[in-house]
Length: 119
Image 1 (tube, helix red, strand yellow):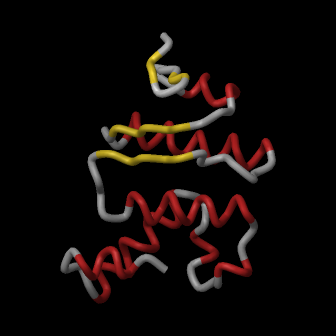
Image 2 (cartoon, rainbow, N blue to C red):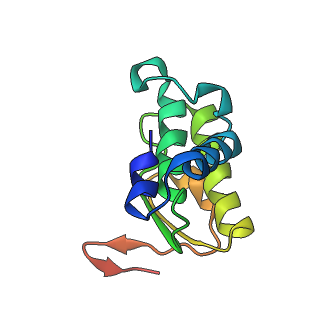
Image 3 (tube, rainbow, N blue to C red):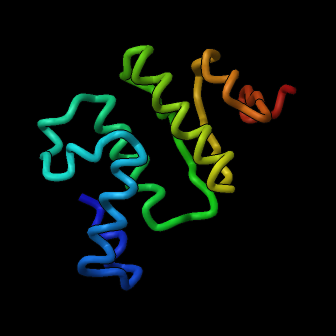
């Protein structure tokens, strides 16, 4: 699923497989390790995308409309994961959204209108 991201970084074999399983379990998809994308719901696919983003331990994650096309429960679950990453894993998480319901997860909210900061 995202072994390629690890392979590029020189992590292969059992170590890469273990890391993959650890990250998938952390986002609640440990039981889906051998599933194909078409077998996953939209919320599960979004959690795979988050897992793929964090598997290589980046210092920053950029998320463009991470809850788009998700129902409210899956959107909430996605934001809980991103919020936890920002707090527990000491990473910067930047979320771009039009959904004001996500503001509660933010440490800082910046509004941009017509290319300029408004607040």
